[in-house]
Image 1 (tube, rainbow, N blue to C red):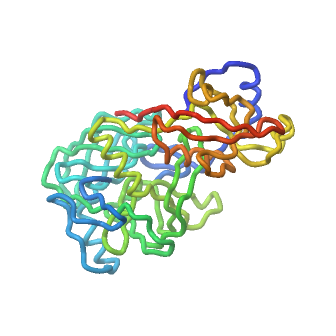
Image 2: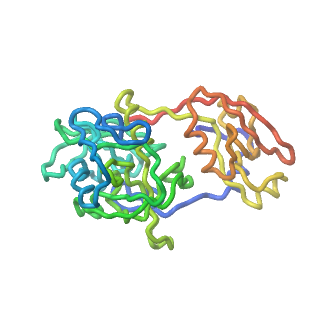
Length: 368
């Protein structure tokens, strides 16, 4: 999303001055993901926010809300255990033809290179090989294909769940197969800041207090109707002072990306062509900025959208497409909502001056 090269000493100085953002790391498959990383559409994706039957092989829609044991009975047949050279994770059957969605970090090595093949254990205990079709690192979504067909695909709901709604997490934490935990939706639209492991951050996540542990990554998080509302993505470990804070990649993101990966082998994302950092009091003072919030531009990609629009290193972006930008994750979330080729208006502070720009976003892709 942010390809660049240094062009002058100011960019290097800004980079040195910027505060590195970190979040607690995770163990298990793809260990080292951030924070502690614990991974649907069309084959059963829903529209207008309610789960729908989908194609043959997708589990039927229940008439009303279910008890937790009933949710488990509904969803568990579609949850698989994924074993790689790096460890164990989870996944959800996306299509009856053997397509399975999971977190990209589950099927990648420490250098974020996807494994060529992995091992999948189905809910009935049978095992089969699977190939990694494609991964999308910006969203941490991957699709793998099991050497089996006629599998029970889950239903996915792309609706935004209500805060307080039931969440049921099913996966393989710490190698314990078919483990179930439950809780509620604690928050929506959560963003995790960029880190060395996840340079673009993790955006627009669902927060839950249902326990999520290493090995849950890529497993199902279901609602009271038995529809999958997302994939377990990460948790904040107790060592960080957190209590029951887990994160889920929403089905709206998973299904959109998975469909692109299955169709094109890659997913497209809008690119502005710069590297941002949160403002610090020292940087605000050094560059005499008339704002204490925003996303500081520390590097600009030559001939990229930001460069062509006139944005410079040292500018502090305060709005994109009418959306207020107070920190880096706001900027990343705004770009996630945009499309390649789209023109967006930006406002920035350059010292004490307010500048406006129009940039045409470029395209970058996550590939297999």
